[in-house]
Length: 366
Image (tube, rainbow, N blue to C red; front, top):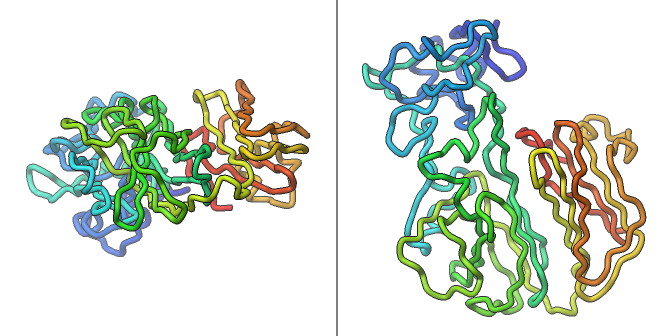
């Protein structure tokens, strides 16, 4: 057998494919058509008019695809790895694309025949557990009407030998040059939108100051998106030529806009400023300061043995203070490669930051 630990290694057999896609058939066409294929795996069936994709693209010494291999991209226009991002130009269409899954993105399986043949070799190095390129859209449950708010999502980081697809692979859409943003709705009524000020990042820190529409106290649904330009929260008119994309694997979150005097506790965020440096930030409630705050970085393996307790932390900052509306950060912490969570206690309230990830592996559900 060459299927183990959710990965297929060469030589590939029909039995390997059956196990990997979870479908009981001995026919390759049936397995490709009906199997539960993880579309975010880089190496999987794609539409390409070649019978042989191995010659010149296979590393026989290490039994894997060369980093320079390109067959996995397929040859359909606007598709990469068989996947087509959902692009649109009229922002009011955004809600119609959201289903909490692919949100309008498409995966095109090969159809067979000379132009799109079924190839057993496409499953070589297939990773059933390939991480999603973006997921885990987070915001605080409550936001002060005139206070600061933070929105973030997890993005997988590209590496030279990755066996999964990241947003950076969609070169024709140039996701590294797009601006990640969020849009506020009351039911189906659009209220305002904004993007990060820097392309290629999935975190926003802003206030509603100068917003196009004053958000009244109440509950709102917030949807993430990408745009090909920066959009300030003050913008009131659509600009022609603006291109938008939905965020796959993300669902809208519900937030409540509360009175400025309502206690919302502190907001905490964290973001890797590079692939090897960690920046942890905590923003105090605008109405009060905090004493006796603690921050810990804990490997995801902690969840395999929770009895290890907080001693599993590989980095910590004890008993710091957090002033009113203070932004506190500790850069240049360099942990080993792996998956991590940030855990903080602020005035005895506990917080987990889930958007911390060094290697593109989906963290476990805590």
